[in-house]
Length: 239
Ligand SMILES: [Zn+2]
Ligand SMILES: [Zn+2]
Image (cartoon, rainbow, N blue to C red):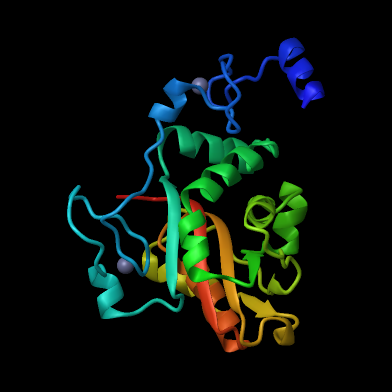
């Protein structure tokens, strides 16, 4: 603690959003202005896929798409909306190689979604895997780094080598919902089904866009014997 206080004097913590000095000792290094640019996702929302409703009041209720076809996961939640400040942070993290942002983004999720994690009572955390080619290009798996923060905060084991991406897939960006589904179909495998058999699993990803990737992962895990799959992501694309 003393070392930390000393370091704070020599190197005052800078806001990860705008590089301004951050007064105080917040665990998440963001200034008040940058916090204001982050939109938390709150009720009313769909208890299945986690999509927020535009109305500010009312109870949670299943959304149209989830009523029509139930997703292969029990529930999904995201901490914040994917735009503005959060979009910038995620891009700098994933494509700019700023690995230290894993902690900032991971803590955002850990804070906002601890109630969901408690309610779903998972027995392990599994990050959405990257294909080895993508892993070599990027140097790290962003979901694994986020999963590590969540595992530490929620005292859960992190399983990083069981769910694997067996097939190369093109990036989902710019694809329609049905093309996204087709793109990831059959892309994942479970190397050791016995490790997840009859277990409640929590999948972790950085951004929930249409949910195609986490849905395919959840389907793969369920087929391999998982009892229940829930999903958390830091951010969610909200139309
Ligand atoms: Zn700032
Ligand atoms: Zn829904």
